[in-house]
Length: 187
Image 1 (cartoon, rainbow, N blue to C red):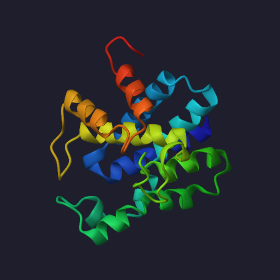
Image 2 (tube, rainbow, N blue to C red):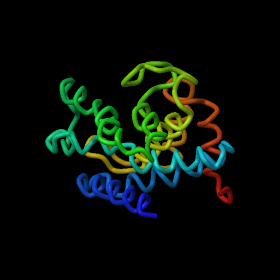
Image 3 (cartoon, rainbow, N blue to C red):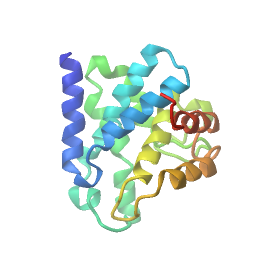
Image 4 (cartoon, rainbow, N blue to C red):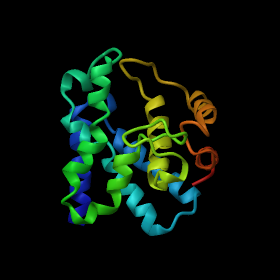
């Protein structure tokens, strides 16, 4: 129970730091659990995905406020710094034994299915399934939120974008399972 309380506190600390994305970690966690269940993953893997979702952006604590809260597009240099957050998150948590299973999810949640993501350029099933799930639900949650650089999209627009990027940015099978899980009446 104290582990779970600690995870929640870390997640809330990040959300409080960036008011633009307040509750983002909770939304990503809810969606990730929904997709993990739709994909019929084992309970132990669902638990890892839930913890990874809560902490996926914890490395952003190391990103300067001027970049994290910048109202416009990031420069190339700022983008490179922002892209360090998965590695920083892993570095922050690597000594926490009960989180060892979530480190690959945190590290690889910005990998792309076609191999053009970061930090390692993994492709397809080289990317841990939990990280592929986080990639989809993180993007979906972000699309529904007002950002300094983009207005929020409707759920239909965000789902259309996921379909468009299935196979390049996202695992196409997981995208389809996610879209099915979003249908009314599906839990």
